[in-house]
Length: 300
Image (cartoon, rainbow, N blue to C red; front, side, top):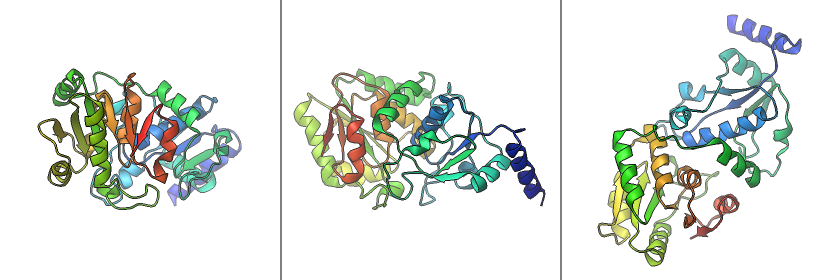
């Protein structure tokens, strides 16, 4: 009863202008999802609107789709210079009931970007995609790596990566995406990784591969034995799913990236550029969006 009264009063105060209208964005998932959602919020802030973020997912759910791997709110750990204001529970309740809009990439990707012209009060729920030119420009403006983010063990590994002439990050997404999921498509098959590794062996002198996965044991037992590796690889297993943002930094410091489902490998590739960088993507319909975000993507 008290909660209903608070929500009713809050709604009336918005209507009469005592409480200023806001844009509230739902934030969920891992660090890359958080980056994307924060980016959308910044586009609204650049238009002069006050933006708040709904972080209730991390209190009410906080895992992947299979309830196996944790999903923490890590955005400010990865990018501590960012400024973010959290919406109150009352504001979330009112906005979700009265001003909710579902994303253009929630059930089916729709080429409708009219949500970018919304004015407060508005609640942006679900998932949104943006025109590549708008998204990439905002990504490069907003996200910069901070040298103080990594702990001792990760910093030592980062220094090792930077010393390699040809370091290749291999992102192997498993977990809830090791089976086909409607919005992500089928998982990257073994043949994809075989071709991707061969691509760098043929092009580069002595590539060294760093494997990043939410299931490093599977990589060691099932993937690496099929890739004809000698001593030119390392499986990075010092970070669990609660430290995915540190894997993101390590991936970014590799010279090249082999990506899979999800966005960790792709965001890592975009965080740090170099003139020789090559990024390998899965050749399937769900990956075509990324074609416009990389200068010379390699589809395998």
